[in-house]
Length: 293
Ligand code: SAM
Figure 1 (tube, rainbow, N blue to C red):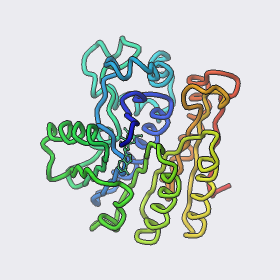
Figure 2 (cartoon, protein in one colour):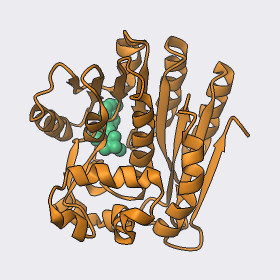
Figure 3 (tube, rainbow, N blue to C red):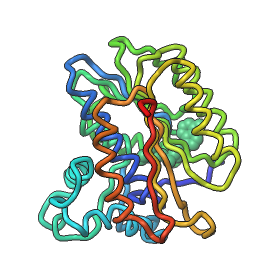
Figure 4 (tube, protein in one colour):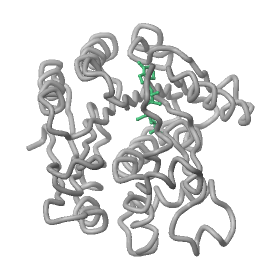
């Protein structure tokens, strides 16, 4: 049984990085009329209360989304303006504009659903019994059965089921909890299989940066797989504090295969500001690498 619950971490620095990039990618991919299939291999519960017990216990959103809200939307780079605007849609009324933390925080399923069009499809995998049930109930309220499928199954098994999609356009988000050591190898396996079955898909993989050999090795493996397939990649990381501090996640990254051509430029101007806003000590930093360099 898994013990990870995303409700403890919703809106933290890793979510800010991941969801801002996810929004930028999805906005780009939905500019073309042709239908897009989006697969979220590790979906979580879908919606979170930042004023609820879980989020209040950890207080992680205070060091994540709240830091962006405190500086005000107008002074932020475009990628974060889009992010805050989307979160605002889940927090209607003047209270959101005046508050330092939203009450409701959408996880990746709801972020994606907001951006998709009628012709697009969303496949959501979640294996945790409680979060799978919560996700199914949250999604049921959207009355979008034709568009969204909730699969309470192993997300690593998605490739054979859904790739390639009928329209031959797909975005796959792979965002495991890495609670099990084998998740690292399974992520690499998923990308290898995905690229074999559907080499032109966009693959967005979140990973933690923690002092553990598998975590250190994963981005290298993802680069090798992308290079072997001859596909462009982009890798953005955000460190907010020293990894020596035993409490909390110090850093994370997003590895994207076949990224939109606009993403690198958007991140180049946005990541330095993210370091300033979310950095907790002098170790705060970002990296941005891609095949183009
Ligand atoms: N993607 C979500 C978001 O951005 O809002 C957060 C997902 S959370 C980091 C990872 C989720 O994966 C957890 O809810 C966990 O229960 C679930 N999970 C773990 N192993 C899984 C598996 N093999 N297949 C599907 N879900 C899994």
